[in-house]
Each structure stands twice: as structure tokens, then as C-alpha cells.
Amino acid sequence: MSVSLDSSAYIAYDAVRGDSLTDWLILGYRGTRDKLSVYSTGEQGVVELKTKLLPEVLFGLLNMDGRMMLWTFLPEDGVSGVQRARALVHSRAVGAAFGHDATLTASSPTDFNLVAIRSKLRLDGQGSVPASPMTQQSPAFSSPTSPSHFSGPYQRTTPQVDDRPPALPEKPASPVLNGGGVPGLILGNQRSLSPPQSATTSRPNSPDLAHLRQQQPRQASGSSQRSQNHQTEAFVTSPVSNGHAAPSSSTPNSTSPRPENEWRQQTSERGASTSNEHTLAQAMLSSSLEDEDEDDAPAAPHAGANGSAAPQELAQREEEERRAAEEQREREAHELAQAKREREQQEREDATRLERERREREAAERAREAAEKDARAQWEYERREREKLELAERLQLEREEKARREAAERLRREEQRRAEEKERAELEKARREEEERTRLAKIEMEKLVESQRLEKKLKEEAELKRKAEEKLRERAELQQRFADLKPTGEIMLKGHVSVQGGASMLWRRRWFELRGTSLSLYKSEVDTTKAVDTIPLPKQVQRIVDNPEEASMPNSFKLAMQDDDEWFFYTDQPDDKELLVAGLSMSAEL
Image 1 (cartoon, helix red, strand yellow):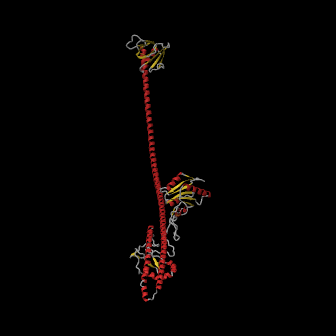
Image 2 (image 1 turned 90 degrees about the horizontal axis):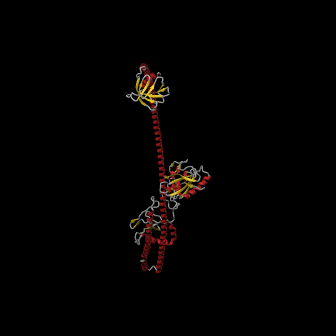
Image 3 (image 1 turned 90 degrees about the vertical axis):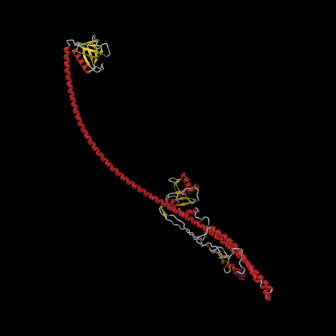
């Protein structure tokens, strides 16, 4: 049942433990059985922590005033016994990994009580000084609720501490402090003996010393009674010393408690007052003896003069007075010691009370600061919630505005699309109409071209026919002329022609002369005395081949001879070739 911690848990713990504003973290299994990872962290203390709790087993740490609380959250519903046992084991493992000052196991968000947490962390001031049994401290807390992820209201509590100082317990023979705060001694009928401010003593015949002399016999006979009645005596401060008013200080029932330094100053003043009271007591005893001596000194002569007092009676009286004076001194010393003990007891009680009041005030101040911090955290949480709500509302308005703009944009685009479609339809219609007009124009043009072509063709055919007829006529005329010149042996046709044949395989440029019986070839037209070649024509030419393949020349023809000899010719112009072929055909009788 071991558990492992994600590395992010250590980083979050350092943030909570360190100087950052983060003061809590939550760990959870996140679907696993034995691995804990960080769910969330925050800076708003217990208020924010309770809003992040989920209905599952959780662990976490809370930093409050520099002290760490390790807490385990086990919901009442949905957690089996095995899961609870595993969670307790894992909580000890988390505690071993992360340092802490106290632990808390909670089953609902309401268990995260600020007062309980502060008490566990010993931040309420009650762990240092034991509370007085007379101190009444109200544990009532109340605060407004805050939202939570769990059902049921969450109530944050704020401590309310009674600022009134606790009543002191009544004790027998306890000193009572008046406004001056300096104790004095009340003897017999509760008259006050004021302590002097200097080393001077009271006058011997003061009323208080006379009162003491009057009380001596009664005190000597009833010392045990006074010892019992001493429980009702109290100490008060002398109202006037050397003509000056004694300084006043706060009583235990004062509504404004004294600070600790004032208490220490008052304690030192009381010690000085105690020293002054010892000086006063010695002065009172000396004055009492001097008064007794003064009263007894004239008594002896008076007795001697009258002769009524014996020496033995005078000695007995002096012995009684001496014993009474000693008893008086012992009683006064005892009363002074008792007063000193009671004064010291009162000072200790005052010191304890002042220290208790100081700590109660500090505890109340800490509680108030905690309540203020809690209130500030609640206010900050509510502020953030308001900001979230305002942000959500703003985002909703922005979404609605965006939706409205998108709807307007869609409508605009739809209208634009329709306009574009209409424009495209109109353009398409115009294009089709233009195409139709173009097609009709093309048809008309084709008809015109066709008519022109037909007309041209007719003209060409007519021209060809005319040329053919003219050629036939010319040919007939040429044949007639050739027929007229053939019997005479005159030159029928002459000109230049290229020849290949006979013993030569090369094309040669020759001057020819055509007569009725032969074709004579010369080197040039200037040298016609001797023919280079003479080709006999009648009954020697087998056929005339137009454009033979062997010649591979334009305007060429071939003379196939009866002896299988061949002559190839080509002229510069087609007409020249036709005239030459016609003349050869006439001469060869083909």
C-alpha cells in the first residue's frame, strides 16, 4: 500500500512553504491507486480551499501564519472501508514526505473550521498561558456563507472575544487598590497612616500616635481577637503625601487594560512604597516610645511630691508599659510582615492578571486579524466570483454580438450571392444572345464565303476552261505550224534545256534546235556549227514520260528510245516543257 508522489507535488509544497503567495495545495489520485499528483493550488486560504474540494479522497497542506497543517479529506459517501484504510496509510506517507505542524481529518467542507485549524496549529494564544478559571470566553462564531461545490451551506466563523477583564477571585485579607495604587496600613478603626515621601517622620503628638497609645491596652488584651479580625483589614493608598496628591492608575475594573511596561513600572513604585512603609513603621514606634517617656517623666515627681505612689508601683508600671510597648512593636512588626506578604501576593496576582489580560488581548487581536483576513479572503473570493460573472456576462454579450454580426454577415453574403447570381444570369443571357448573334453572323459569313468560294471556283473553272481552250487552240495552232514546218526541214523550236543521257550521267545545260526529223544539242547558242548530240525522232522514240521518278527534277520528262536508251530533260518553265514535249511528239509522230 505504498504511494508515490508526482514531481509537481514537491514543487507545489516548496511554493506553499516558501515566500510565495500560495498558501494551500490539494493532492489526489487522479484515477490511479498509488500515485498522488497536484489537483490545484491557491492563495486565498481556507475560504478558497473549501470551494476546490471534490467528492473523493484528497490530501493537502495549508499554510496559516507560517505553520503547516496536513489534512486528509474522506467524504462520508462513496468511500469504502478499504479506501479509507489506504488513505490513512497514504496520509502518513505524505506526512513523512512533507514537514507539518498539525494534522486534520475531515469528512465534509464544514470540517475546515478556521477556529479549529488555528487551535490545532496553536495560533489562538491558548497553548502558552493556562486560562484562568474565572475567564469566560465565548466560542460563538458567525459569518456569511460562501458558495461551495458541495451541497449544504458553508459557514465561515469569526471569533468574538469579550474585552472585559475577568473578575478577580475573592480572597481573605487581600489588599485593595485605590486610585493611587500605593498601599498603606489601616489599624484598629481603619484610619490610614500615610507613608512619607522623605526620611522625616510624623510629629510625636499626632492624632494617629495618640490613637495608638489609647489602643495599646486593648490590643494587648485582645491580640488573638485582632488576629482573627485581621482577615477583614485592607490596604489603601494614602491620599496625600507631603501635601501632594498621589498618582492614580487603572483599577482591575478599568475598561482600558494597562500594558506590560506600565505594570512593571507600577511594581517598582510599589517596591519603593514598601520601603517607605518600613521607614514609617520605625518612625511610628520611635514616636510612641518618646510620647510614653514624655508622659511618664512628670508623673514621678508628682507622685513623689504627693507621697501617694510607691517606688514598687512605679517600677511595675514601667515594666507593664515596657511589655506593652514590646507587644505593640511585635504586633506592628507582625502586621507589617503580614501586610508585606499580602502586598506581594497582590502584586503577583496583579502581574498574573495583567499578563493574562495582555495575552487575552493578543489572542483577541490575533482572532480579529484572522477574522479580518478571513473576511478579506471572502471579499476577494466574492470579488473574483463577481469578476468571473461579469466576464461570463461580457463573453455572453460578445458571443451574442458576434452571432448577430455573423448573422448580418451571412445575410449580406446571401444578398451579395443572389446579386452575383442575378448578374451572372444576366451576363450568361447576354453571352448566349451574343453567341447566337455571332453564330448567325458566322453562318451568314460562311454562306457569303461559300458563295464567294463558289463564285471564285466558277470563275476559276471558267478561267481554267478558257485557258484550256486557249491552250488547245494554241496547241492546235502550234501543231499546225509544226506540221507546216516539218516537211521543209526548218527549225521548229529552239532554246535552252538541261539534258542527261547518252554516255554522260551528269546534267548538262544545252542549246537545242528542233526540226522535223531530229533534235540537235549544242554547247551554246553561239556555237551551232557542230552539234554535241543529235537524237533522231521519227520511228526512234518509243514514248515520252512526263515527270519521271529517275529525274527527280521539276518540269522534267523522259524520252524512251526503241534501243532502250533514255534521255532526260527539264526546263526552266512549265510552258517551255509543254512546247518542247508537243514539238517532240509532232516530230516523233507519237
